[in-house]
Image 1 (cartoon, rainbow, N blue to C red):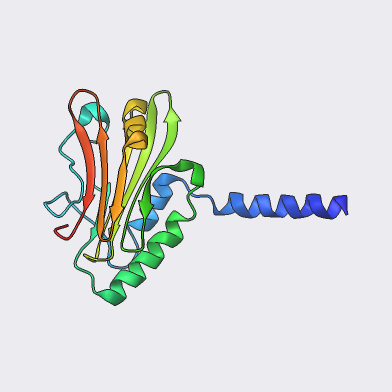
Image 2 (image 1 turned 180 degrees about the vertical axis):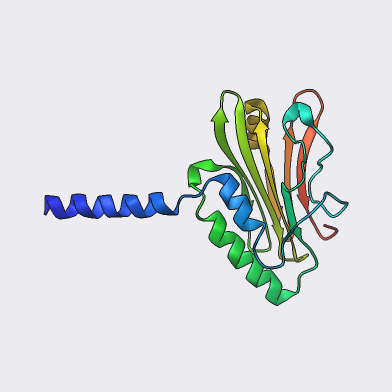
Length: 179
């Protein structure tokens, strides 16, 4: 009995370990799901992302993927694929977010060194038929802490995450009828 139990625990551990995905790999997979393409920042983004090198949010080519104006079937296909991928990222990497089946926003962080983190942000709106995935490297611990402590508000098709950074700067994710 004891040997069987230990074998079962070992098999379950191997299954979980085999399905764990790094944030970089998750972003690569998310940027290749149906109806999503690697994009340049534009006015459609649900995030206030000006060049913020002091806080680690410097957009470089290839670290933003998005899909907009999807129809119902596309929303389901893209949403199912996105959640399948995000469910492979270890839960301990998620530092903030929420979902109510109309909108979802998640922030993941993975330490990569002293005062350095990889960050993956996923923002999805079933109401608007849009998804945005952003992957940023070398984000300082202070910025990750601000993202972790940011209050989240979800109501209907509205999602808000407002992080207060050093000084009076902010990093916000807003999903509503307009975005």
